[in-house]
Image (cartoon, rainbow, N blue to C red):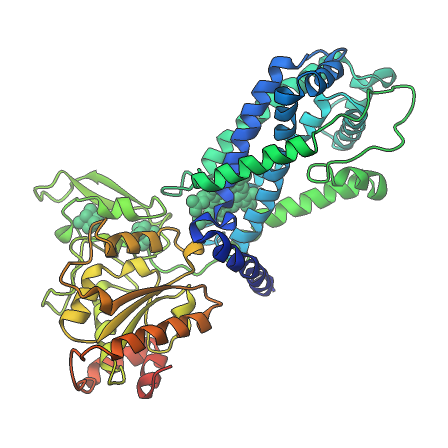
Length: 533
Ligand code: HEM
Ligand code: SF4
Ligand code: SF4
């Protein structure tokens, strides 16, 4: 059931993201930058909030007038700041909702990712606490409505000894003590929110907390434009004598307030409780079946720390050497953080398939899919390729190439060390190599595509050696739903390779042992021997 919902959502996101890709390019696609945009909007809210505080009178008697004054007398700076403050806050809600749905759609919330998911829950609560206390401060008709409804909602819970509504809203007015408390909360809660936002990403290596400059500039220009066009205004001074007849609501922050009258307070709390419990349980519904964590083989680890640099999940640390070899440090994996993506295997300088030993060893390896297995599968898949043009596909299991029958499957494209491609071409195992991963904007393992591109461009160790003929290697970045596009790109590349002189005229028949290996793990690999796509 959850899988079906995820599938529908994924299709929905793809439908929106692909045109954005064409319009902005994958790196500027706002849907691929939702977390970073969340941080960006937070900073806009923070800076504009500090600016507004210069003009704001924190006493209940003068609060409304001070907001009106800054809105009209200083509209060109403080007024614009007020609008920026409100609209950037609204955009944070939009961003959080879209980010939550997208992480869910791309299955980025189970396994070790439970941590980021679960710390997202307090972010939602804190964000709403910020918004609600903010509306309170204007002390207009909407503020009164928010104050009364919030107090009544809180009074429903058996937390406070005495009802807050009666205590603080005596005789129809809010005591200035309570108003001051709200002012304090509107400063303290965002600070706490920022702290939780930091906690949210501590298990992620190199998190994108800043959107690309162009995207940031475009978002800011759009926000300023809307702020000038439709400035944020108050809704009239609180008239304590009469109940407000009609008030405009901010539907981003206050959608549940009208429901309090409609459903009753109990139902609203039940809804919020069920939502929070659901979100809290989701990473384990159902739990992800995890492969065993990467393991370090000290005899082959020289302590270079490349695996630490490349691991996207902060799962490896360098620790003091424990085996007496003449290196100061060694790599140590924290199994609780490892998703078995194999990126560290691709990063390790010891991962070279050229070693003659049958029992190929490296500094860090996946117990369930070792470098030795990968080399064997590569040879088997190459031997099974039909001629005359033999194109070998290394495909990440999360991308468009995952459905290609003759592929060498990978948990992430960056698991394949560049030397493996060198090995395939220099040993003349194939005429061309396709490295196929997820769509560029949505790498399942966050950094797999970037690291692969950098290694191929010789910007990062271990890099693809100069002797590897570049025109015989290509990368295809397509989503799991784009097998058609993968086939097209594969076909185009295969046609190009067909025009080159073959590196080996007649492919030798596959040795029986290698075919057995291929058949054991991936029956399709063998079945597809007879024909291309
Ligand atoms: C102000 C609100 C939020 C901000 C600013 C924010 C920001 C971020 C950032 C910057 C990342 C790292 C993205 C990357 O570099 O790949 C991230 C990851 C993540 N966020 Fe949020 N987030 C927010 C709210 C939430 C919420 C409400 C949820 C869900 C309940 C959530 C779930 C996740 C998950 C599961 C990841 C991990 C993705 C992965 O491991 O690839 N976030 N967030
Ligand atoms: S397999 Fe992936 S998550 Fe695990 S240690 Fe290696 S790079 Fe990190
Ligand atoms: S990349 Fe390999 S050699 Fe370098 S620290 Fe990691 S395991 Fe050791």
